[in-house]
Length: 95
Image (cartoon, rainbow, N blue to C red; front, side):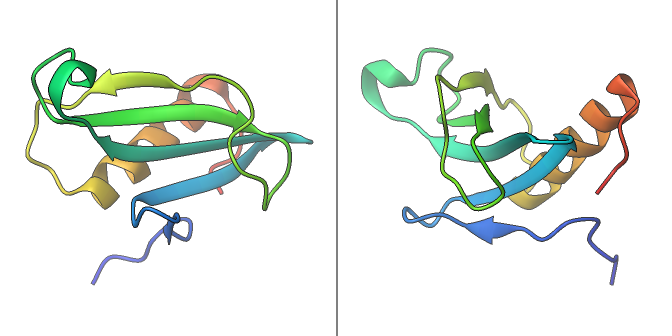
């Protein structure tokens, strides 16, 4: 079994998420959200969301940005890959 780089948690809606400190005091959260109806603007039903948070244990602070998911990868694999990619591109330490 592959070792996870960060702990994947579940929010109050049962959605998996990762919350990590991208820089000192700069917390981020990414998660997968399911949307139906008019909220499903890309017709994929699944969206990767990213938002800043006020602290390690705080909820989202601000407006999330969403990205439609066109692949069938599991939610956990998508959010882990997103964190790794953001950390690699920005040069911050992978948690």
